[in-house]
Image 1 (cartoon, rainbow, N blue to C red):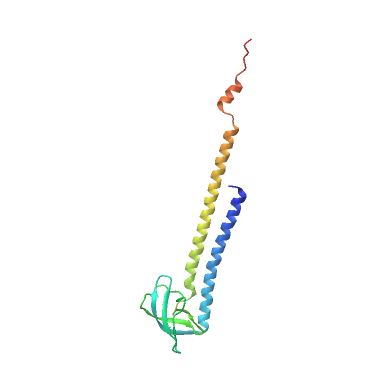
Image 2 (image 1 turned 90 degrees about the vertical axis):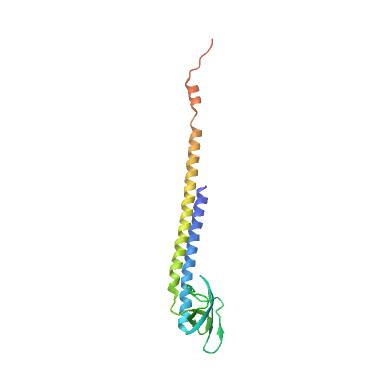
Length: 168
């Protein structure tokens, strides 16, 4: 592989790792911002879990003014919830679509974000090492082929060393 192409590929891989890291940090910052917004105008109510899986939980709750709400994107931090469960939910009074189970906070996003960062950099590092090893082997093979081509064959060496005899 051309050294320039290898270097540019490595730059792109490092840039990709930086993008993944930035996305994970933005995830944590977004969770912190959402929690700050809930904390500014917080109200707590009981809610029914309508559906739940590992990454999403839909709930229905009634606010004190009598309106029923079901957050469009579900709850923040929905782990360990099951359908039919009744839970306490904290929500933003000015935006009832922003809700979380009571007692949970943005700190729950730190471990997933760190795992995304670690896995992302492990993949980038593995690909960079793989490319470097492939390039090293290709260069070694090329150098071996060139050195074999530059050295004369054994038959050519014996022909050159034999004196010429004349038949006179």
